[in-house]
Image (cartoon, rainbow, N blue to C red; front, side, top):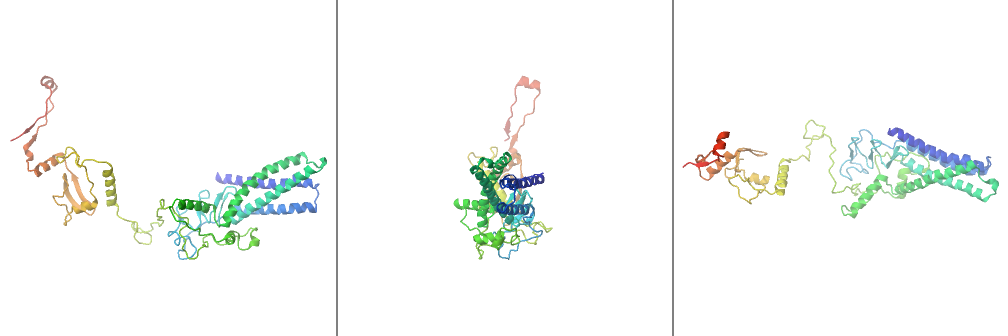
Length: 439
């Protein structure tokens, strides 16, 4: 569906260009010169048709020229000068959706579903991305749109002024008057819209900046203003003359002619030769996350494809246990033991114990001593992950407590009342539980 809409938009643009260019010549200028070919008529229309021809040619190249994609199997050369990867950012740029490394200044286009070299933006009016290989055609297309529309407005306005200054017999006909109005309505909005758009892109051309990079520069300026990062220099600004040559070619006489842009789109010259520039685009320190794009190619899950250990692989079980216990125990104050425990004391809160404190309870033999063993637990074993304990019942807890204070557990006899029949309950009343102490 998107492809059909794109083709409809391209055909609409072509129809609009042809209507503005040729309706004015056929229905306005040709009758004005008496429908006769003359030198003055050719002098007026030949330059206009030349501009329209260059406009259509560059529009065709914008639509049909591949802006450039990352070659299959391309990998950054980290030992070569002029690359953004490694030398500036410290890590190769990688596209998760294309599963390819990204050259400098390239970005992923969601409409085209691919990474575009030196991507400027995705333009719906050409149904294509503006990238490395068609950026020059796009700049020339905007330039010739401005020139052709301005020439068209001046040409039609001259016809209107001539009709207003002459006698009544030279008044435009009804058809000519309608076409004059339609040409103004069609051409003026295009001139204003494309003119403002052209100023934006011509200014970006002078600074060798794409639309995406201008957004990145605005974001960097905001972070500098907020004090998050120090002010940095845009690494691709080579000066106005060299910036234009990087897109339109080194020969100024060919800047208005469709030519192949210089370079392969995989490498760009930097403004600094010493390589001291920091990474671009600058990353927000608060949102920076390390990028690990290396895929596991080995059968061993603990190594990378180059058979080396993962430097980020660290034991985190004890750390997570300590963090979770601290956050849980520190946020919710509670008693050290439950109220039914013999050692319960009101107001005595629980103090979390770190893994280091747990390790201090372990004797040199690797087991906990009897004095340091937590009350209410049985020692099972001590391993590399801590000691394992089993919960005990309340009866066992009471037995341990009585034995620790020198009392005999069998001295205390607990009588549990048996359920009485309904008749005995009605005659004798409720029965209560009693506890007898044997002497």
